[in-house]
Image (cartoon, rainbow, N blue to C red; front, side, top):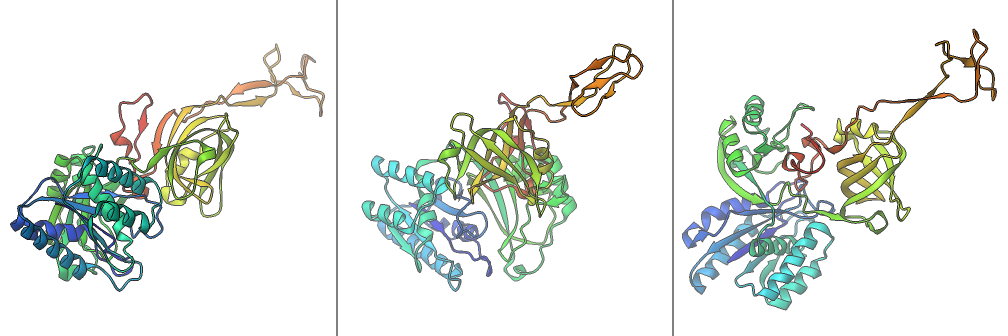
Length: 428
């Protein structure tokens, strides 16, 4: 049986869908063994109803008999019902149970989960698929969580083409809502000992601990990376007492939200990989955001790209771009602007500055007046053409990314992208 759960938490009242999964891992042990790690599936990060990382969870448990299956469903629904923040109008949990997935159903489920990561779905989209295949489900209130629950269950049914891991530790119930006690020095040490097998633990350039959240949820800290790395890192961290810890397999750090497209085909609420030529010089606007435009040479369509203030030192890379540079940008579309997550600089255009020409005597000429060219005061030699002197650019071609403190859960860190045709410059 595959169990999918989503939308149980609240921005203001806390809660955590992964914590429900963590509790169920323990409670369902007496009914059977998990067939795989619990799954944490990040969906389209642009959905306005999301709490934080727009994550849903699923469990795949091997059980025997219809009576045990019914008991499992009751245990799951009781846990979701008791832990969900139902008083929040934006909390609308959904639970689905998949018992059998024939090939045509798997194909539809795979398409649905992909759309849930890349596009905007409606509650009725999930309900239609549930009704077509008679999927056992339960939607609380308006049932918006059925979208994520079905998508997470679909991934468990079909598998993840690319995956990473996150080991999440949870607080003792009495501590929830109080400041977290996690030793920052031990977190830095954990990062130093395990990077690049782990990532987004700390943001060195901006002196920030990234793996410790700040809300009222029960998460103490979460370490992302490869399976051996996250376990090693967790062993280094000193903190308040941990109630429980669960290792999730996840699509975090995979870029599954990105779609290849052209500038003229983009729509808001989706995330893209776009190729273009820089057509306006980067400019810094109020708030410290850096904006520039790229244009598709084939269609002539242009679009603004933005490195917002929270991307910190990433903006320094963007400020060095020049008109004529060929780039590939990755990010989400909102209000006609690409919110940058990564950029690949494919070609740097040559830049020049003009200077007064040098005379044959070795001295630099002076201006002879407006429109009259240049003249050497010693030799009286004249010239109408200034010298064009190449400007050395300190920017290199390759991939650049926002720092860990600004990275979305689903975005692939460049430490996972080494070995391509262009060099990578991981943001640390």
